[in-house]
Image (cartoon, rainbow, N blue to C red; front, side, top):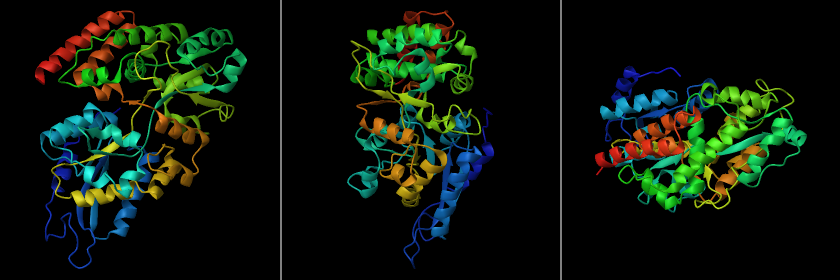
Length: 437
């Protein structure tokens, strides 16, 4: 990814932070019509044309319906938005609405007073009732709601039906069956699990899931809290042992040098049996311009199967929505809230489902959009999950996440053992805990 600091954008966003009142540029309402007027700034993370055109349309539609409103809409990618938000936070110039991953990434803004409490707009309201609690809950902190989800996402195993048929295996219902399927898939000429960890996050998604399998939720919640991390539960090391066992037995060697996209190409081109991927990637799996015709209709998916005897949350699924926070210091909150209601209306949610392929947290949007069977199945699965385990690299403090990232890469390179990885995580957690005491 290009690394863009975007100081010019910081200044332009700061210029939009105007106050409420009689000024027609404020986030108030017209004295004559009661119509909302003013300017707000909106920062999201999908600059690619396939996504941007949809957000541009929704912004344009809102402005057309509200002639007294101006919206400064900016989009930058995953890594650039982290840098952008860091600059804007330091300058106290955050946009009125800005993207934030759930977990500790969002909680930093909440703890710092940079995120507005949205509970009064959601509790007992039609808007709140329209949004799936499993998605809203990802942005809940101390019993209050701070974020509005725009999609739903989870990790699942997508698999080739023809590969499974040729190997004589069925979608596994337990981890033990998953592991047992690898030898027949190899014998049939497939890499059982396509896996590329060039950028670190694919492995961390596995660890997120396995931590949820092996460690009780209350223990994880305490450890993932910057002020309380101990990471002494033996389940954390078991998670790393299981991960290494699975990758060693079922994937190509040298995964740290393989990209996730290259691994996915092995799956869609008939060289691999399955891949652990995000539901948001379903749109790629169904893209007739980039995958072979033979792949279309030849795939399905299953959730990570449970591990016998594990002490975590049975049926937990790794994943989290993407969403937006409202600047807690914004003077345009009423306008920001109204725009977010419009963005997450049933009609606009259906547009996002139909044109982007994202599962939506908005009730009824999948039916309205005539979503694919895979997306409908995924929404049902996520809505029924007893726990959505938020990505480890956004749920934990950045230093703990980095210790995990580096440690797991070294584990895959045979440079560290699971016990040594956890030693490094505990060192990072102790440092963070001391800083937050």
